[in-house]
Image 1 (tube, rainbow, N blue to C red):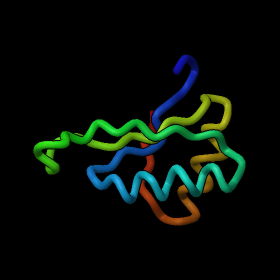
Image 2: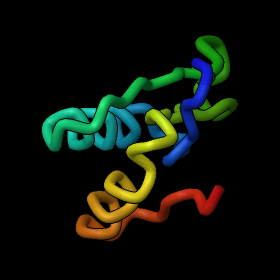
Image 3: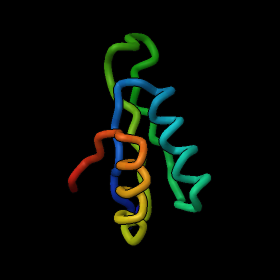
Length: 72
């Protein structure tokens, strides 16, 4: 995923899925990368990536729902 930045990470897969869906609904391309361990559900994280040129737009969308975002 060249030129994509991580905008959000969570230990909760449903929350990361919701964030991905919210971004897509607002016409921001988003991909969910599930790094959760299937054997030990408390290990790993789910990460949301977006194209770098959508970073500011995505940041504003996530601020509007009061989620912490990464300041990358």
